[in-house]
Image (cartoon, rainbow, N blue to C red; front, side):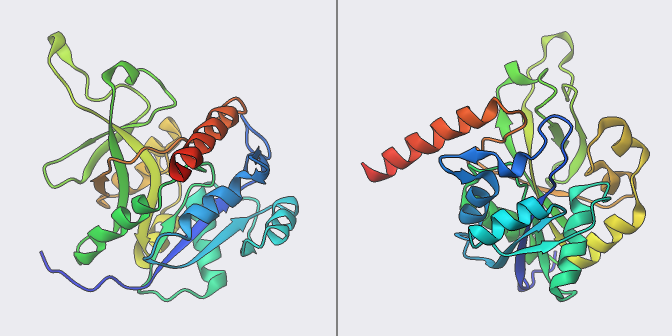
Length: 254
């Protein structure tokens, strides 16, 4: 495997206003600031990132970003996935074709900056085109459809992602379950190919955009992280994240 110098790295946070389960989610107030602000502040602490930018389709989000001094670009409202929105933003910014671009989910306000560093490291190998993070999960959570599971091969490349419990432990065989953490890094060439392919059959079935890559034979390198991140899927998750952030601040000040 050829090792190479990692090229310039950029972070883009897609922030769509419309959401079936939680409209206006990026603006959800957490400890007095909109959720996207927390994501931005944590992402910009990653030393590998040259720039972090919000990509939105909403004037309301753009105005809030301007108020809170978060750089943003306006994107079309009709993108089928957040990754499609990331490519439009990357083109707006004029990012070089040699760049590595991280799609930073806008609903991860408890993101640890080290997770982004972990995500970048595999790109020292020339053959890595896409990378994402995973973490071990309690087998008791395997039936939770909000927790996306992933199985990987010996090289660490993803074999499949699903909301179902994979692998299926037959006859009470012991199994290790990995939770997918929705952070992705792409070489620009892979990002362009992802968008050009359009949604695939498995992607539409599971409502998981990363399956577009696997359906088309594009490997996704996974990196196991020890860090945990609390995502916001529903309005009730805001209180959980707020408590976690408050406790984290207390622990850091102690």
